[in-house]
Image 1 (cartoon, helix red, strand yellow):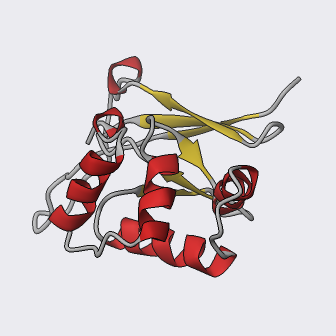
Image 2: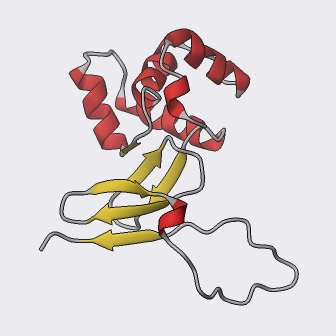
Amino acid sequence: MNARLYNNTMNIEYLLKDKNITPTKQRLEIAELIFAKDQHFTAVQLIEQVKDNKLPISQATVYNTLCLFESTGLLKTIDLQNDYKFYDTNLKSHHHMYNISTNTLVDINTDKIEFSKMPDIPNNLKLEQTEVLIKVRNK
């Protein structure tokens, strides 16, 4: 999905209905913040954005909506196995670089990383996709 296609309320309402999500006012407002562009964000960052926009939406509603959007395939998650779980609006297969110092996550196109060798995959399995997470720190 290219999130930039969903940059107005009517398109977002269609997107939610297409996933059998009832487009409540709060879900639409959250979706408008999320799907305005391809981006990575944490729940805490989204809650701050909700507050900055003076939207009357509780933290619980934000968390529940993120969980709903994730479970219906509208968002991808990148779990960094620390205190942060990032959400990604870019659902295409791609890699990431995470800066530990700045707590930022950026996309890396799949053509920027090549694999010369892959581990053996059991015969009863097939490779679905490969996504790499590179962690860096400021010098």
